Image 1 (cartoon, rainbow, N blue to C red):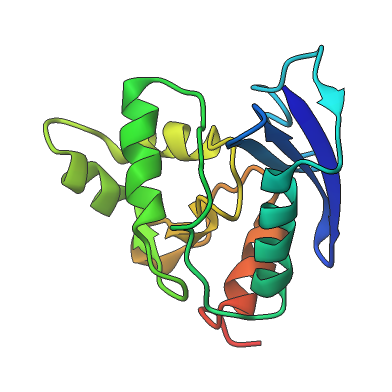
Image 2 (image 1 turned 180 degrees about the vertical axis):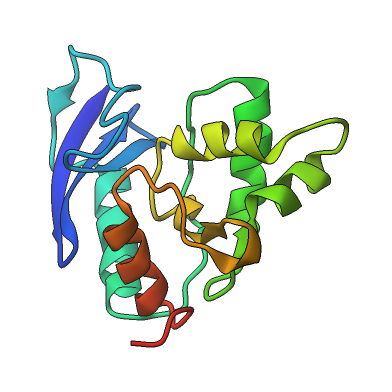
Length: 162
């Protein structure tokens, strides 16, 4: 496992990789910060995956409407969390979805609260866009890096008026 840092206008980010895939991206100090990063991880700034992710982040923070299809992602989590994170990856730039909508997509007797738990444990912030999930009636709720960061990201995407 490897890690590096990235400074954004919304705060410092920690990136993690297994050497080929992005396995983590957290805002410094967020809830569940680096919880899937091994304590034996080595700082390595020159991995190609880190260069690719930093280029993606530069474009994203510059306001470009980009997708995640070209970045190899490998978030670690249960099958249920993987299902939720896959749905998050399908939320287009500049759009939002509710926790309840995700629960309906999964089917069964899934609750919005269970979805919220999976969303909050997303280990790859921004790129797996958990900030695009909102509460019922459009309420901004639950973001591991804080509601103010979520609001800034949604403003950047034009979802919330500046």
